[in-house]
Image (tube, helix red, strand yellow):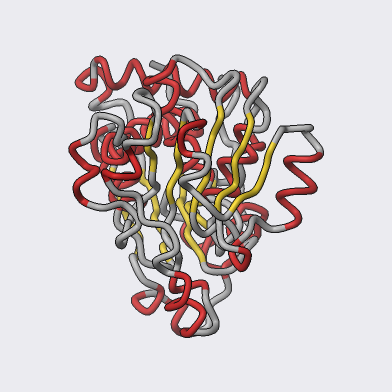
Length: 309
């Protein structure tokens, strides 16, 4: 892999071949984690989280610690000089004096790109506003690949908040590069996928897609169902959030209409869009997905730091 020194800001920053090589490395780490427990000794990861996070921050920190490295950073901007008005560019330049690689989550779209342009240190986008979340996409793809062997000719349903859901935008952009993948976009009118995703990704790649408001009408056709929560933090109007938050709830009754080998994915956290009764269904992969996130991030850290096996 020729990824040393590079940054990951959106899924298309890496070629399909480079992503596949990351999957290979992640798989080898899964098979023999103790072989990799010291490879990052002496290296520092900086986690700059301007927004709340559990899985993404913990999985990055766990990834670096399990590789033998160390972690510095902040979990909310009020505990840093950001509270004093420091710019993203100045923050990342300062952090680069101490760390070898940085992970940044920010509510403003494009903030990780600004950070990457301000330093030679590798920068990883851990989510920017409603835009992109590339490492979640790597997690999603790894989960599907290990369960199904590949992505060709899959019918993928994405359900819920498709307007503000950065995980959805990243996933569509990544899967559109694979042969024969078709999409079913399931959402209320107010939360439909943005026009730029429809035009610049789906239509540009000639990926088959259709849009519907009814999950039950299409669940029997899906190989993968990617559920998302309606994100309260992205709404300007509380009334709109309350009206739409329970639009889609996946429960055991709905699962009876799905294929026996359909995969249910969710980037988490969930609120109530997947009933707890679905957790025991063998088609529920979202907690395995969370675990896979640590392994793919271990592989990514190694690759960007240029650490050989």
